[in-house]
View 1 (cartoon, rainbow, N blue to C red):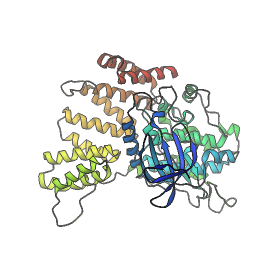
View 2: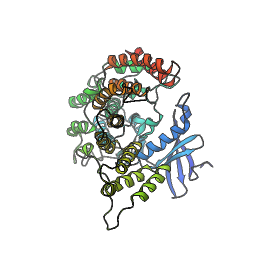
View 3: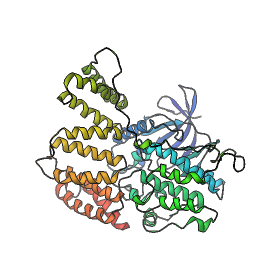
Length: 502
């Protein structure tokens, strides 16, 4: 037990592990008398020059709040998050067991039914995570725990997206943030990430479980990325002929270079693996840390969960007439305190009453709906924000600046929801309208739209088009902002990196 107290509550005990981002400790929650795990992160170790520590802290707490709302038994419980001095901390439930990397090292060769059982459980987790939508971004064996009962838990959900940059995966030293061996090509090159990114990492994990090694290794990050882009993986059945052909086929689809050639969802991967899962009553008795043990019946994902859009909260029934101004003031206070989820509930719940009192198309209701949509986006609830933004955009004439901004926000939602083709089409339709200075007084916005178009082209695997878009964008950005401007510098770094791996 150490003397250090984190957040005036968690007393650090023993260190469990450490890496480039920080350390993981066992700790003691003095308030609730329980053992927890505390992850300490140092943003200055990965952020690079010019980063704003306060912005990283804000993003960290926001991501932890969003990911803590995901309800799935395959995710470690998040209890608390915040900052302590120069460090960010994340408090999680303490998990007994072994991380998947150690579990693999202790069982060589790893039985292929165990590999199928691990990946199937991870599919169930990813299905719930992607439905939010959240992208893990750093799925690897060190971020997966195998518990004594054989169930698998995923760690570090949301942390990688805070430590990541927006347009490149490189720090100032040229090292990728995260683990290059598990990165999808479009992620490492600065393309938009989505569920397809996590599915590629899932394929790398499956390959490692079956073969004992990652499919692509190298002495430098650039060398690893080049192999990800251009080399096919060695078929695992050449190394282990007992691996079923059906399993190798799933693996090769997960490792497809083009994101569009990978499975459409984690649910689809689970369905392909289901015939290979162990059945109740078959095989030898299971023991501790055996990932086949949970499969008395496989943990199938909820059917069509990704298609469900949560309804907007309604006002509670009762004879009392809701006090719209008082509710708005309460929502403002909650927003000032950073309590976005509660503010969302109040704003969404008061909208029907406001429409009844003032009219559906009144200025008051429109203002409330704008705040409601903006707060949903700030809270990471893109699936609920999207229909609100589209509805707002339709209330203005085509080409109206306000309509264009709502459509722009809607395109960002599509991007976050893992729909790159739809987002790309929307950005492309908006670009000529934003380039009209009468409809858009901000000269920097068209450049930002073009940057997002390039990112999405990378995510869709169209590297030549992305390169051409970035080259023209760099010329115009330097002419508008100057060569030393951060925007120009980011575009230049991404373009240079893309040129090196083409």
